[in-house]
Structure formats: C-alpha cells, structure tokens
Amino acid sequence: MRLSRYFLPLLKESPADAQIVSHQLMLRAGMIRQSSAGIYSWLPLGFAVLKRVEQIVREEMDAAGCQEILMPGVQPAELWQESGRYEAYGREMLRFDDRHERPMLLGPTHEELITDIFRRCIRSYRDLPQNLYQIQWKFRDEIRPRFGVMRGREFLMKDNYSFDLDLKGAKRSYDNMFRAYLKTFKRMGLTAIPMRADSGAIGGDMSHEFQILASTGESEVFFDAAFEEIDLTADDLDIEELKALYAATDDEHDAKAVPVAAERLRHGRGIEVGHIFYFGTKYSKAMGATVAGPDGDDVPVEMGSYGIGVSRLVGALIEANHDEKGIIWPEPVAPFTLGLINLRASDQPCTDLTGDLYARLENAGVTVLYDDRDESPGVKFATMELIGLPFQVIVGPRGLKAGVVEVKDRRTGATEELSPEAALNRFAH
Ligand code: P5A
Image (cartoon, rainbow, N blue to C red; front, side, top):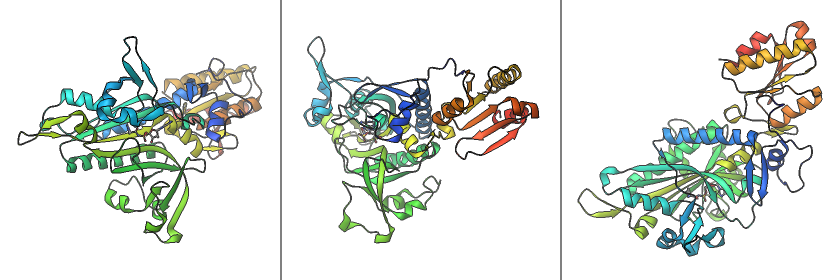
C-alpha cells in the first residue's frame, strides 16, 4: 500500500476526551473514529489489526474442534422471555418493536438463540458433544462506555457454546476452551492470567476471566506470584493445578480466604479479554433443549459459553505494546509487517530503488506500507513510529551511494545497514 493513497487520518494532538493511552493512540493513528458514545467506525489501519486478531481467534477455535456459524444480531424478545433473562437483563439491553409490533432486541450475547437452534436440530446424545462459535458484533447499552473500544456499546466478540450429555463432558469442554484461550492470547504476544470470576448475567457456578495485566485495566486483580513463573502455554500444562492457584478479580477476592503467603500475593489491575462459563442446564431446562440419552430418556443438555473480546483486544494490545512515540505492534497482529520509507521522493535513484523494493516485497507476500509522500524525513519517521509497524526499511541518498539501506526494529530501536538484496531476503521468506 502506498501511503500517499492510504486513508490514514492522523491526529497531531491527543483528543481531550481520550483518557487512556490505547484510546489516544487509536485516534491519533487513524485507526478508529467515534460515531456516537461507545460506537466506532474502524478505518483501514484499525480494521487491518481487527481482522488479524479475529483470524488468530478463528484459527485457534477451529484447532480446538469448534465450528463457525453466524447468528443474527437482532433477536426476538420471545426467546429471552423463555429463559427468564428478558427482565433480568435490564437497561443494558437495547429493545425495540418491529413494524408488526413484535418486541425485538439487539443481541448482547447469544445463549438463548443458540439454545433455540440446538433444540430444533439435535435430538440424540449420539450427536454430542457440539461446540459452535461465531465472531459477531454485540450491543450492550453500557451505562458508562469509555476508554474507546475497551468498553464500547457496540463491540466485536467471539462467542462459543458447548453442548454435552453430562457433567464430565461439560468439564472436558470447559478445560478444552481454557487451554485454547491461553494459546490464543499467547499467539498475540499476550500473557493472560485465568482468574476465578463472578458469572454475573450469564449465570452458572464455574467461571474464569482471562486478564492481561495493565495499570489502566478496569478490573482489580489478585494473584499468586507463581503465575509469573509458569509457562501458561506448555503442552503438558495441568489445568487442575492451574485452577488451584490463587487468582481472583476483586468481586471474588476474599482477603481472609487467600491460601497464599502475603509476600507471594500480587495485586494489580487487569484488562478482561476473555471470560468462560459453565452453567449446566440453566438454559436447556428453561427452554427445553433435551436429547434422548443412551437409555432413551430425555435429558437436558449441559452447556457452557465462552467469550473473547475481539475489538477490546485491539486496545489491550496497545496498552501492552507502546512507548512515548506510539504503538509497537507484535508481528502476528501488525497491520503491515514493514514500513518502507523513501527519504527523498524528489531523488530519482532513491525513488527507483524504493519502488523496486516495494514491488519485490509485495510479490514475495510481505505486507508493506510504502511512504512515498513528498514529506520531510522527520514527518515520515514520526508517522512510522506512531503507527508502530514492527520494522522499517529506510532508503536515502547517502545510503544509496554506499549501496545500503537501513533496517530498523520498531521495538528495540536497533538498526542495521544491509544491501537492498539482503534487506529483501530478510523479510521475503
Ligand atoms: C460468553 C460468550 C459473555 O457474554 N456469553 C457468550 C458470554 N461473556 S462476557 O464476559 O459478558 O463477554 C465476553 C467478553 O467480551 C468482552 N466485552 C466487551 N468488550 C468491549 N466492550 C464491552 N462493553 C464489552 N463487554 C464485554 C470482554 O472481553 C469479555 O470478556
């Protein structure tokens, strides 16, 4: 992509209403624009990151044996009246009538809708287990939308729902998701600590939140220092051992019941990027989602639901990866792998070499943002630092004479001089 053609509305100043660094940087780097409180448009740079995050989540869900579907955002109130959540959900649910005066709502989550699909399609225990997921926009009329995409009213969630015949199966599904979540966050370069949490409006008696430590997080968290030492993604990770370690959000934290020595208890703030629930037969009983069991009797299915805040993750990734100059994207989620800077657009040999590198990198499948604008080096460097692509390749008249270009690592700031061929080979595998 040529920067001269790219829709990238940068801001020089941080907007006054943006309180945390991820919100400020997302606005300054032209990733999003607010349309109304807690509701955002995703512009090309932001959308590119959102899609990469979404794709990692999708790949890990597929690898864990889940199947992707897509349910409607608009739901009939009827289903929620059946489950008993229509009243309980309160004003966070946006409700309206259609032209036939049927009460409808914008889905804040999809337990009811999936339970309805299940009861209409699955009749026998032989068709279990099932685990279906979607990546879809949710609407919650949050009382205090804030921090940009971190607490939005419209936000992108990956939500899946497991169906098992019995408790043993349901626990297996829960642990399978538990493991998949650790892997998913790790692939984005994030360490998420699983914590015992309140199951709130979703319900059930077993629930874990996945928290990324960040001083700007909305949750207050307490955890055993052991979490700083364990490899949370090891293949032989013992989930039961992990669950036994102390880690809780403030609403579950009980200072008197902490089995951790005071000097081993960590206290900080976290961003909740995922939340998993086991709620047994709460919805299947209320809505009549049963299967014929091995002995022919109808049994309500055991269910769980599992959420990842896909759009929130974009903000969380920035909270965890930035410096005073701007964003530092981890490679797996970067909108482009590298920024190609032509320091002197008016110099023909410079422009020829940069254009040639650009074409060859793109041909090799490397995603490149080519700053071909007629701007000063200072402006070009500041732009690249702000938008945070993992690498920069810098072409200038002085280097060109010596037969080299500069390759810069955004995170470490380390630079090396390489021949244009060597620079190409560095990225084109
Ligand atoms: C699990 C999947 C649920 O809704 N039902 C389906 C269950 N869980 S949850 O904890 O309420 O949400 C799952 C994740 O979505 C993100 N999230 C948000 N992101 C941005 N803005 C919001 N207002 C918002 N609310 C929830 C969080 O990452 C949460 O863990």
